[in-house]
Length: 147
Ligand SMILES: [Cu+2]
Image (cartoon, rainbow, N blue to C red; front, top):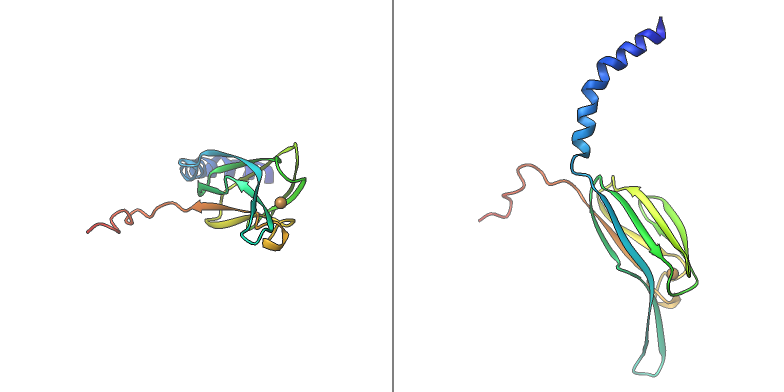
């Protein structure tokens, strides 16, 4: 019977695969960053007023494989349409509301958290954060900087 054969195959393969999956997740941690939308105001030497929206904090360091939650609370500014580049996550942070971006950090590198409404200096930005996903260290890389 076909289903019987598949069941036997699962019984044989699962015990071999499960420890591998567990080892890969052994160092993964749940990581939460609490973030707010902030605003900086200043008067320039020429008398002009400048407003810049910010994420605070703006740098999120995690290890590859971590289960990450960015809890973003809208404090200053009304609507912030937000994208986490590289992970294809989008949301809108509204004043007085809290949103959560949840994902597994499976891709190493530096990824921008950007607000498309306040993208650059001419639009009261740049409103950017930076997700830093650190890959696992190589086994023989530990002595790389040794004298
Ligand atoms: Cu914004």
